[in-house]
Image (cartoon, rainbow, N blue to C red; front, side, top):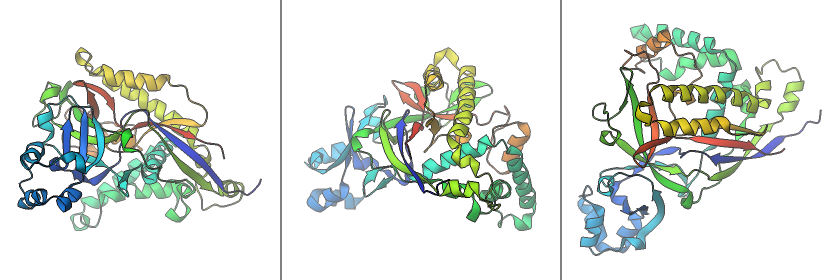
Length: 382
């Protein structure tokens, strides 16, 4: 076999609003909403060029309505616009100034999807496909026992839960098969492909559909919400994927590498796992679809189910607020597993033995529309 370095282009098509957020948020004094246009302002430029603006910012009274303050100070905010977002929420515009906006990750001021986020989602799906949950359950059990020793509590971090399982499946980090999966950051994304999405949390309480707020609410409009910078549906983003000289290593005797073949077969493995995941989500939403309020998410997942894919394409969920199921290797979530999670402080309420019992959903026209983070991944030719 020819010993060649494998590299390919990839394309991501966004199927539902998707984002990878950064720690910083856009404060309420940094944007102006006009109709469905949400303008993000360059506050530093405004302060440099306008003494009235600088004086206002220095006083620190930044919890007031920025629009009214700019009018009072006779400052034309349009001179200081960095970029514009499409505002898709139906919430009263006056309420938006009480919020911060979760900001998409940027480099040199431009949005993108980090390769590490893409690889993380792919790695989880591949690992699930091995059907080796028992290793992770054993590793979790071992961690809980060690952590129960009060003398060792501080020295055992939750990040260590999977270490034993990872070592059994993939060996040491230096010889992990995932070292052969090298995914670049995506290309930079035009601001015209961003929107400001309204996101709320569905919560199941005593077998009934509720919405998270200061208490569990029956009506969606009474619940709490966040506003998130997301990439619009239909956006296509490119990048590169490399596998190094993996074909050479699969034909030689390198006992240090475990489960190396799964990298070459990762598309088919992910597709099988994604199909099971989508089916389980349809079942969940149908079970709690009171008065048809969850028709949006159900229709979304059914459309994914019907989507025709080539042998170089797969669906995957990545990024911010995609939930436990998209990020966990464990799929058999029974009462015993939930009790283990409770002992780690990861589950507060287990009366219903439903886990996960919450879903974050994008809201359009005052109704749940779709989950966050679903994309179609297409791998180019070598």
